[in-house]
Image (cartoon, rainbow, N blue to C red; front, side):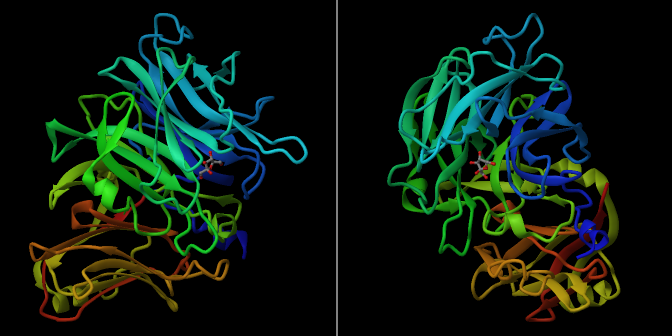
Length: 486
Ligand code: FRU
C-alpha cells in the first residue's frame, strides 16, 4: 500500500501520533488549563517495542499539541502504562510552594535467561507543567513478590480518608493500595476473584465516583478493568466495568456487577481506556479516552508510518435503568464546536430522509438520528464497493455496526464482522449518535447506554451516505448531519 493512501486513514479529529506506534492512553491529568495525554509509544517503529511515554496537550480535548517524549526507559525497565496526578499539597516533598505533576507508572524489566519479567511501580515528577520530567531517585516505589503481571497503576486522592489510593492490575485481579505521599504504599485489599470476566489478563484499571442520575447524594464508584486478548476469543481485548461502593480500602460490588459482565463498549476497538484526573470540581465531568484498537490485530492495521489512534474523548455518567446504575457515555461536548452543519431534518419519514441523503458526501463527521423504533439502517463511508452499516434491529433489540464490507480487512481473519449491543427501545424511540472518521466509527445509542467503537479502513473516495428502514413510513423525529474536522 502506498504511503499516500495509508496516510489518508489518519483521523480528521481523533488523536494519533505523527509517526510510529501508539497504544494505551496514560497519565491523563488536567493542570493549569491543559489536558495532558501521555501514551504508550514506540518512537522507532510502527510495531510495539520498548515503551516510552509520548505526550500531547490540549485546551479542549480535540486539538492536540505534540510535545517531546516525557519518559524513556532506564535501568529499571521500559515505561508501561500508568497515571498522573497533581500533588496540590506537596505530599511527596518534590515541590516547593507551587503544586506540580507526579506520574505513577509501571517499569517493565525483562528477566534474565529463563526468568520471568519483573513489573514494578515508579514515580517521576514535573515542576514545569509537564514539559520536563525527573524520575524519582528512590524508584521503584512498589514491587510485588509473586505477581508477574503487576502493572498500570491508576492513582487518585481519596478525599474521605485523606490519602492517595492506587488501583493496579495484579494477574487476574486488581490490588488496592494506600499512601500518604505516593512513595510509601500499603496494601488495602484485592478485588476480582470469582467476579467479572477472566477471559484474559487484567490490565489498566480505574476507579472513580460518579453521581447516579446526576444526584450528588447518591454516589456510586465505577471500576474499569481492561481484559487482555486471548487465543480463541472472537472479541480480543476489551474493557469491563463494575459499579459498587468504596470506603478508601475496599470495593464492594453492586448486585448488578455480581450477576452479569458489563462492557463499556460492544465494538472491537476501545481498549485500555481510563479517565482524566484533576478535572476541576466546577466542571465536574468524568472524562475518558480509550485506545482505538485491539490487541488481536493492533500490529497489522494498514496505516503507513504511524499506527494507533485514540477514541473520541467521552464523558462518563451513571444512570439508573431497571434498578441498577449503568454507565452512560457521550462524546465530550467540546467536539460540537467543530461541527459544520450538512443537513437538519425534523419529522420526516424514512423515505423522505433517504431521498435527502442521496448525493451527500461525508468523510468525517457526526450523525444524530432519533426515530420511532422500527428497524433502520444507515450506510456510511459507502461507495466504490465499500460500506459500513450501522443500524437498529427492532426484532433483535440490538444496535449494530457491520464492518464486513467497510474496506481493507485482509490483514486479520477476525477483523471483518458485525458487532452488536443490546438496546431496549422501551419508550418506543431509538436515538443514535454516530461519529465517523477516516478510519473509525463510534456509535452511542440509547443516550449512550449502548456504545460500539470500530476501526474501519475504507477507500478515500467512499464517502456516501444512505438510510433505509424496514417500513418506509417510519417516523424520523430528527436527523442532523455535521462535518467534523479540525
Ligand atoms: C495494555 C497493556 C498494559 C501495559 C501496556 C504495555 O494494552 O498491555 O497492560 O502496561 O499495554 O504497552
